[in-house]
Picture 1 (cartoon, rainbow, N blue to C red):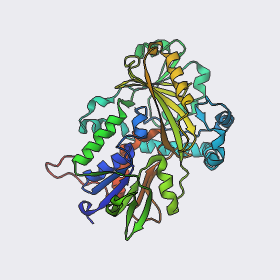
Picture 2: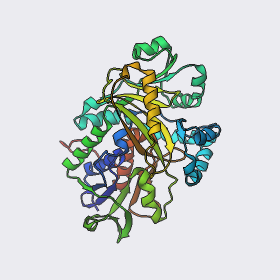
Picture 3: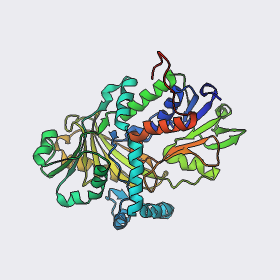
Picture 4: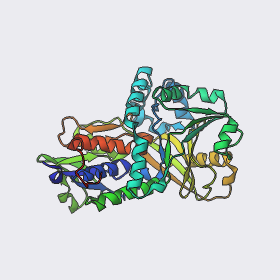
Amino acid sequence: MTPSTLRIGVVGAGIIGTSIALALRKRGADVTLVDRDEPGSGCSFGNSGAISPGSVAPLAMPGVLASVPSMLLDEASPLYLPVRYLPRALPWLMRFVASARPAVAEASAAKLAALHAGALDAHEAMSRELGVPELFLKRGHLHLYPDEAALSKDAGGWRMREAYGFQVERLDHAGIQALEPAVPARYQIGMYLADHATILNPFRYVKAMASAFTGAGGRFVRRKVSRLERQGNGWRMETPDEEADRLVFDHAVVAAGAWSRELLAPLGIPLALESQRGYHVQFLGGSGIVSRTVVLADRKAFVTPMEEGLRIGGTVEIGGLQAPPDERRAAILSRIARETFPGLEGISTRTWMGHRPCMPDSIPVVGAAAGHGGLWMATGHGHLGLTDSLNTARQIADALLGPPGPPHQGERT
């Protein structure tokens, strides 16, 4: 089949699925994007907007075993696993701890560095192509520490960044304030990564991408896909209504985030995937408090200047897909933000919780599903879905359609 006759269905209209759908459509395939919600309405709506190619350290780093008791007992821990969910999460937790072995963590870092390569330039080019260059903010990321003891806890991660060529500038408090005058005296050490960026409205970015996809002839269907099943040599997406009769494809790509495991398990494809429940507090104002992504490293919180105002996001809660949001987690973030930046007092807020798909070793699953011809997977990106979305889309498009040839004269690249 030629790309123009190849019917491809993509499940999941977050940043990963929408990027894949657009990449496939740009190469001429007949693509349908399917999601129960509007594009970008899930995890892509609420992330912190960080394009972070230097995030090569996996979540499971050597020494993580010592943090397991606090994960279970301290509700304010940045990495929290409620005791009620422990029986369900135990297999994942055991793999997570095993992934923290030094050799495994080093191998994970190499894989993440390869996946991140070129992400910054790709997103800058994509923002221009979509007509939203104002969303791309290239001012670096500033990681803050109160003292040497706090910095030493992250020493392994900084060594990994430097090993993969990322330039890190260490700042004292005066250097920090030269970049971000509102940072309080509490933070005496800054680690500045100049070659990082921020998307100032991730939701609008995904919507612009989805609009480009449909504008190029792609089709978006708002339906919940409850099951995937073989139909002839292709795949059928089962939905609650008659639309399913039309959702038959030569190839299917599962990019359903934390819900991917539910779709793949009946096919005998076990994914060690958990929801990394993340929270944010959106201040509806306060846009001048920071001018770039600022990471309060001792609190594991990202502070970002969004279009709507300042956003603070973070925490990892391994608690499954069914439990309602724990508003105490959002309240912790709100308190951290207000304690750090007094200028936020009196500004109203909105809170959010989303399900980031997380693998024990932090390595996403991208590629063909072995033994299931025509089925592809793109999930498990954790908190790096935005960073890795365009590279993931290119990998899937290359594997499914072959590398793109040189453009014809007059053809837009």
